[in-house]
Amino acid sequence: MGRQPRVMNALVRFSNLIAPILSEGNDAASVAVLAGRILESQRIRDVEVILLTAAPEITETTLFAIRSGFDDWHAVRLLIDQGKLPPDPRIHVRVHLSQAQWDKAGEIAQEASIQHIFLQAAQERPRRKRARKRKTADAVS
Image 1 (spheres, rainbow, N blue to C red):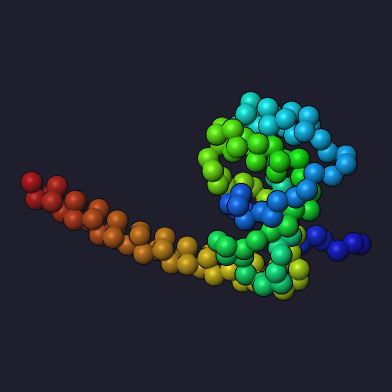
Image 2: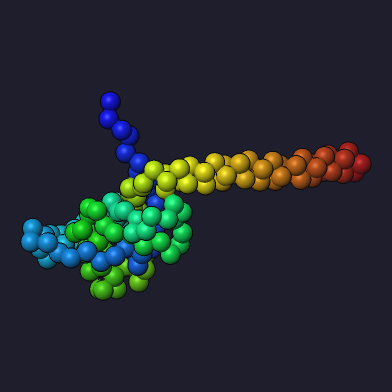
């Protein structure tokens, strides 16, 4: 059996993607067609990227190099230039990770999950107390 790809979905700022160069196969016409599809569907296709650094943690300022989806990047850039998209939209990407980055992403997800459980428990406790107070107040009235 082959190794599972280490890929994570993320929402990143367009400005964090390093500008690709149009290759010989890609032309302005295909970019314009993609831009039209983005406007019709109001959905930008995922762009596949890799981190430019070996740092295991992805932050708000992490830079990415585009692995595939070059035409999509250029279509978004065209729509930004035309004022049809905000100047720095967030777009969905599929991030290809090294083993260290994958492990760190797992640690962060585990930590977030634990914090979420604690927050839910903390939010439920006051609700129960308020419900008891309301029942008591209703019984007294």
